[in-house]
Length: 269
Ligand SMILES: [Zn+2]
Image 1 (cartoon, rainbow, N blue to C red):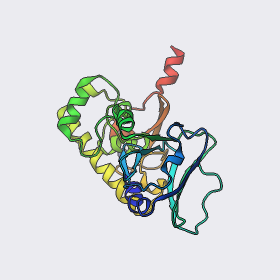
Image 2 (tube, helix red, strand yellow; image 1 turned 120 degrees about the vertical axis):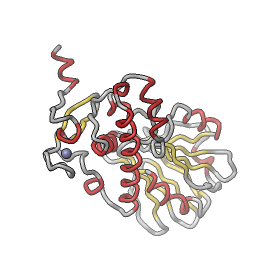
Image 3 (tube, rainbow, N blue to C red; image 1 turned 180 degrees about the horizontal axis):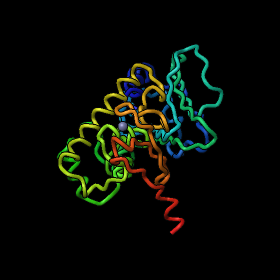
Image 4 (cartoon, rainbow, N blue to C red; image 1 turned 90 degrees about the vertical axis):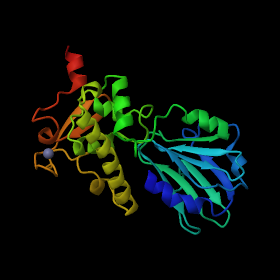
C-alpha cells in the first residue's frame, strides 16, 4: 500500500482533473457532492491510512477516499495509454493521463467516497494507530486491553491499522508466535518479538513491492501450504479461522502442534 502511495503521489498532482467519473454504481458510496465536483481541481497528492488512499484537493475543500479492500488496484496511466474499458472508477486529467481503479473478480468490495475534509476525518476516526513503528511499549498496552487471538488482533483495523490477513501470517511467522496465542498471555519478550516482526515484515514488503514483486515472491508463508518453511524446512500448514485461512509453520510457531479449525469445532459442539 505504501509503495503504491509513493508511486501515485507525484503523478496525480501533476495536472488538474479534467473529468472525474464514471464510477461503478456498487463502488461509489457517496452522491453529494457528485464526482464532477472534482472537475477543474487539482489533487495535492496522496495520503494513506491503512488500506485507504486519500486524495485531498489542493484547495482543501474535498477529499477523494478510495478503500481498496483486498482486490482493488489503483493504476496511473500516462497519456495515450489504453486503460480498462469499464474500471470501477476513472479520473481523467488534463493532458490525457488517467487514474483508474480496477477490481479483480465479480464481487465489488472496493469503495470510493467524495467527502469534505471534516467528513473524511470522521470516517477515519475509528482506525487504530498505524502498524509500522508501533513499538513494543504501545503494543503491550494494546495486548493488555482485551484477550484475543493474535491473528484476529493484528487484522483488526480499529486496533492496529494497516495489517491484512496475508501480513498477519508473515508477521506471526517471523515473530515465532502461534496465530491462536492470546494477547493477555504474551510474555514481555514475545510482545517485543511481535513488535519487531511487524516492522521488519512491513519494511520487507514495502521494499519488494517498490521493486515490482508480485504476491508469490513477496509472501513466504501466506498461501504456501505444504511448501517448506524458509526457516526450518517444515511444510507450512493451514487452518481456517473466522473468515480467513491462516498459514503457519508448526515447528517455528506452535511447538509442533497442529491447529484445529475453530469454525468446524464450533459447528460440531
Ligand atoms: Zn519453520
